[in-house]
Image (cartoon, rainbow, N blue to C red; front, side):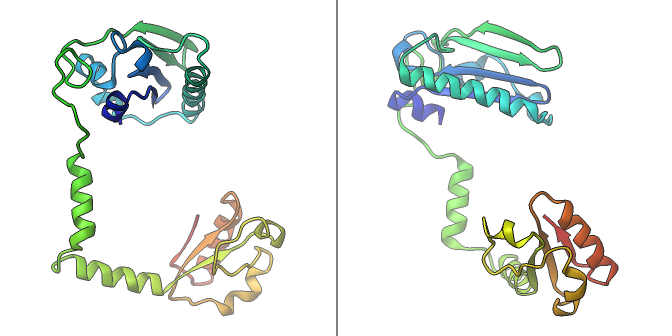
Length: 224
């Protein structure tokens, strides 16, 4: 994505989160091509390897995402001062924003003085995935896996325990509608050997439905 932004002259309103921290900047801005760094420049100067191993707080995506959206609007409207050449760091625990300067790396392989990356290239993971789809799975493992998937799918049913008024807004095709109050008297219509996936609006009713199903012998049931 970074290479595409640089090569096609598209600014990248970038954001990153981990634990209670977030980062935001604008990379590959055409208006400041001579001084604006790209993501490859940043990664050559600092590593995020330790950060990738950490979970993130639920509040950080909203905050950093809002900053990204704001930067995108500023770029589209041509107003304000976008985060070009500036690296914003957010610390939720201390509720503090810090701003770092992000100079352009002249030796960057895509946005540097003598770039070595001049065309878009697919990653090895993408090529491997495409090859797998084209050739199909191997006989040694894929055939058994496909057969098992078909058997599991054939003996799986989705149960919707929402109310009719909720289902009228959005329905899952093919899923029978049995509200939580009606479920006990309709247990005889369910297959005890099948995997029953129970769905509701927020998870509370489906969890209670699964507890009831397991109590009645439907051990292969789970909530979503």
